[in-house]
Image 1: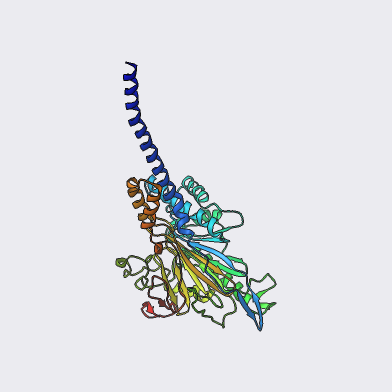
Image 2: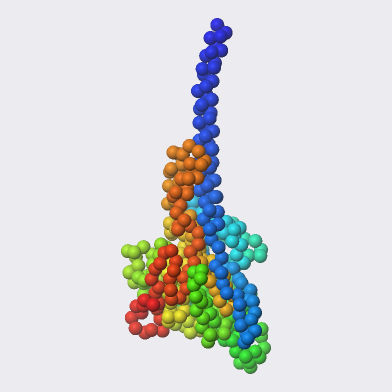
Length: 451
């Protein structure tokens, strides 16, 4: 009788053991999928990105000197959801994606400064003080950074409202958190950060103040290029003799968007360089001549842009180019990539959105910048559809090795890592496209011209 009971116990033990092993295997697969899709895939993508090489030799007469290089990251349109729009799962998912991408990029790439080109929040234009405080707290957690990394933020229409929604309270609330500085200089490089929402040109109080600030910045930049001690410039400290980067707009003595081994193109008539930054792009008629895997969808490219809504007005764009004389312009707002040349010489790059909520294939720009030169490259983040397919295909996998092979089969190399932004006027990237140029000083119909 005892033997029968023992045999029965053995028979019941084996199915229980198989179920336990199956459960452990299921737990292991789920853990491996979560670990890969929520952590490791960001390292896999961003690890392939490298800072572009830039010429660091400058000549003062016959004397050659080595210039310092500033490593800068540029991203745009994070659109943190507020209390009204968006499902809680949407908020959780997309904010986790941006946090992991940003923190991974900081750890792997170690930039010295990061610029966010507007639309930090999705509901800043109408959020209550309590909701604003909550949004700011979440932003500071997601985009936390070491003290030696500087974070500079430009206002967008979703942060302070379009021109007709903007008021002093919203502008001051934004500047209290993110600073109100318009001119930022580091390592001999000048960056101008423009509140492009205020450049409506109708003489409103905020608009007049914004224009006065830009005129003052223009005066200081002009003084940096004149003879030291000029009476017209006064006794105050002078800026570096470097053309600014405009955020939205930048300018400089020489610069390039290039691939490895491509030639440099220089303008020997400019003695300094500016890089301005802003949210709205400078005036262009549409995205008709924009191309590439992260450009606007083909069905949207021919839709005309509305001035002061989709892009700056032609008049405001002319003023910025005249006042600041930038060598490079970086802007956001459209959520898609585009390269435009204004007047045939001033390049503008529209930076795609950093969030899955706006794009399936988000990215950011990496810049190696000196006082007289620069090189830019694009770093792609994991595609959202790839992550979803991995989640759906994971239950069919029976081992970690099979899961790893599945992930690599679904993540093509060309959809990850960096793409060097090509130089002017030749293209030699893996995704060749058309180069568009447009003169803001052309008073014709403003049609984009092929260079």
